[in-house]
Amino acid sequence: MALSQEQLARFVLKPLVLLGCLAPFAWLAAGIAGIGPVSLGANPVEEILHTLGKWGLNFLLITLCVTPLRQLTGWVHWIRLRRMLGLTAFFYLLGHFLFYLLVDQGVDYRLVLEDVAKRPYITVGFTGLMLLVPLALTSTRTSMRRLGRRWQKLHRLVYVAALLGCIHFYWQVKADVREPLLYFAALAVLLGWRWWKYRQRLARAAAPTATRIPASTSAPPTAVRRPMGSSSSHHASRDASTGSPVSAIDTNAA
Amino acid sequence: MLIKRPADIRPSEITPEPVYQSRRAFLAGLTGAGLLAAAPEVLAQAMANVTLVAPPMRYKTNPRYSTTETPNSFDEVTGYNNFYEFGTGKSDPAANAQAFRTRPWKVEVAGEAEVTGSFTLEDILKPHALEERIYRLRCVEAWSMVIPWVGFPLGDLLKRFKPTSKARYVEFTTLLDPKQMPGQRYAVLDWPYVEGLRIDEAMNPLAILAVGLYGKTLPNQSGAPLRLVVPWKYGFKSIKSIVRIRFTEGRPRSSWEKSAPREYGFYANVNPNVDHPRWSQKRERRIGSAAFWDRQPTQMFNGYGDEVASLYAGMDLAKSF
Image (cartoon, rainbow over all chains, first blue to last red; front, side):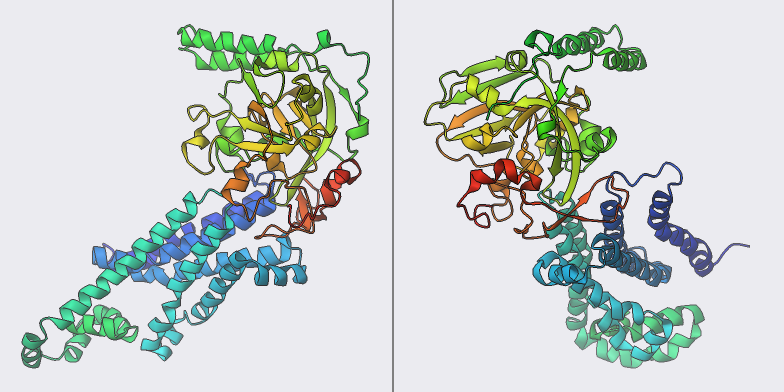
């Protein structure tokens, strides 16, 4: 029997993406253990540190792709990947920091404190990671339910964290800023998309108000309609619970 | 201070690098003529053989100026370095410099000197006896290596051009050739790469021009065919693939100084007490160290203070960094 869309997302797509999430870690582990053709080069500490940092930032940006992907494709099940991708980003970035602390700096706390205070790129990177801590802690379904619409407000910190991550990368390179600029460009597209969507919703909400009010009174209330489709209600209610005023407008308009 | 050259190496005995290098050119010419074009692996094999049959360089190790620390492996030295002309990644130079043509090579000498003009590499090298110097190299990025260079004192060459009393500085320029040097297709730095030394720094016996390392002709990615090595300064001062030497009255502006004057000074002396604005220079990671996570303390002037500290007497090295 054919898989349902939901089963496809849960049992095929998600495990595949999980493998992708683990791949950079596996590559590093192979390099450290000296397995296969993987080589960490002449400066393994730098290679490990940069790999963890860069993949952390990669996964952060990939996480930010989930919502646009859902909106572009109309396939709601992309959302099932979001928590896993976000936590992957967090763990790589936490690893990046711990590796810097414990190995690169050799637990010389004086030097680390001096670095965090004196060097803007480290201050910025560290702040970005700190912003992700509450997001990782509230990533559970329970927290989502408990926080309600405040959950999404809180989780908008990911935009700031991603921006700080890009600045950290930009300030860290010596002269060749091409790669960090690509990250800025990707982030600009991802945030720009959200801004555009937000403006669209504002415009839709503002313009036809007069005609819609009578229409909505005649139509059956959405709250009544929702429980009829069980699988869609799950997502609709999640959207509503994560909703700011903006997505509340969106749900009403939909 | 004069360098005592070992008497047993005469100029006539110096490695005739051009001889076997010209065989490479000959083979390359064959490909051009289509004779070997159909079988690139044959060419590769032939090239490899040419390298193998190349006569070893004739040189004597100079213990006076050599460290007894263990040198880094050939692979570390030639596989992990900065040479932005071939890309900004540490393994880019090794990957992208293999087809770089270093013969024929000319060096233009200009500026405040009695003897100026264009010189072939052979003219430049002919009178100088080669010696091996095992130097520490400290990169401004806080890693370091120990490298057995083969070269000759820079001062000995500069004296041949009879610099005038106006020659207070020496400026060096790297080849500008974006066709061969893919890194130059992007304005990562203001190409061509320029470096400079005060004339007394250039005349210091520690400053050498290198043409080889590990007893072999300098690999392309390491700055072939002719590069500067000034071991008491951060690595970026040791300019590679030099095509121009100019004696100047005014202080030259080096490429990194132009790129980020707050971060890279003209002097760029290794100094653990003056941090790079973005990282500490107190310690360094020695590439290839058994305790690869460890960092060792960085020494003032990279440990060459006895030879060079007097050059900077009375200067505020925090200001003139």
